[in-house]
Image (cartoon, rainbow, N blue to C red; front, side, top):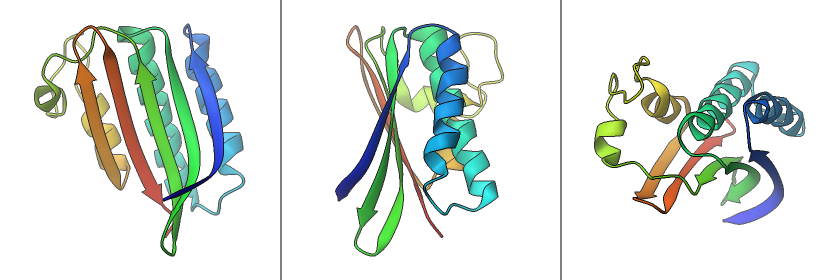
Amino acid sequence: MEQTTLMTIDILDERGIAEARRMGREFLKQLAFRLIDQSRIITAISELARNIFNYALPGKIFLEVISRGRKTGLKLTAADEGPGIEDVSKALECGFTTSGGLGAGLPGVRSLMDEFSCTSRAGIGTTITAIKWLK
């Protein structure tokens, strides 16, 4: 896999969520994603930035244009140094929530993107990586 472009967005407060969405839109302009896929990616960026804000400040969102063989896509990484996710498999169940929300956050991001992984360690933080390939 080859990295060609990288953008980093700091999530330090609630303004970081809007900034991540704005910068994500700007970043996507250089790619040929269909409008529906652009919307999916921006939704995923927003959700991951909001999770950092709600649970694990400070954190970062990384956007990369990647290639794998003949495929080109966008790799979205959200990383924080927060408390970690106690039970990742539970957090990925639709409807599971620790804050009284809908529990659609991480499962929603997973369904919006083509590839998804989540690693988390208590007291160290969480890293979520998701990829959307150009069709």
